[in-house]
Length: 129
Image (cartoon, rainbow, N blue to C red):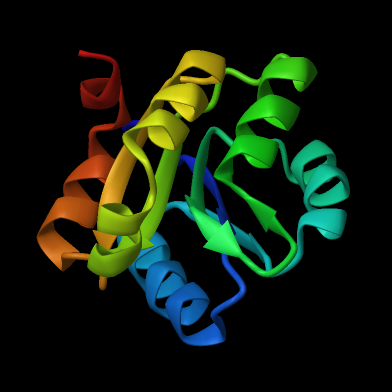
């Protein structure tokens, strides 16, 4: 049997955290969440995630800060950035390419598609293909 992933979700939206948490647990993985970047480093170091979902834009910080922190920390966990369709259209391609240059990233559109998210949770190595 495959070892469960440890999935850390960073999002200021409590409903999104609950939804993703349910998908993570239904897939048989461990789940931790954080709503504020200032708490992210501590939870990251104590939980030791093997996969990270993070909202692209949150009050006070963005995906670049998370990607930089992960790169500096030497993390090897896949980073899945989440953003609503409007934000994806509004975020410059430069921002997403800058994040990806710092730390390899996949972007999912919110609201998350249950099937797409479940596939990522169950087959994280496909993100590296």
